Structures are given as structure tokens and as C-alpha cells.
Image (cartoon, rainbow, N blue to C red; front, side, top):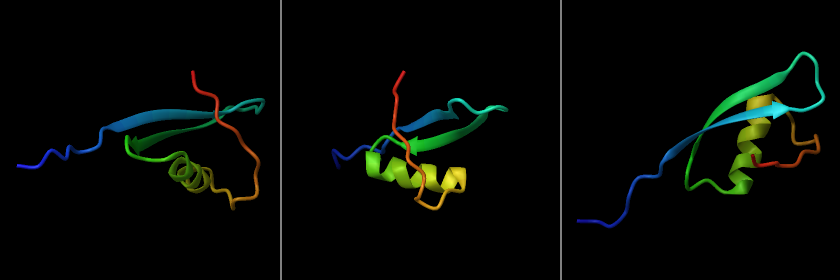
Length: 59
């Protein structure tokens, strides 16, 4: 028997502030994802090409 447990899946709502109309994405992210992983997930979800500046605010 292994002590390894499956990662939990988190649902995140990502909103771009200061934009009208509101631009947002709902993401499903594994609990073992890193901030670097989240960076690449956001790039894909937003259709960005890794040239936009962004920062994370956690509420």
C-alpha cells in the first residue's frame, strides 16, 4: 500500500481587473501545481504569448 495520495483539484476564478467588459476564466488546477505551473496555465487560458506582465492576488 502506498502513502501517495492523489492531488486535489482546485477550481479558480481568474479575473482581469480594470477591464470592461469583465474578462475571466474558470480554471481547474491540481493541488500539486507550482506557481510556475499556474503561470503557464494562465498563459494558455488567456491566449497570451508570455509577453504580458501580471501578478497574483489571493483573496
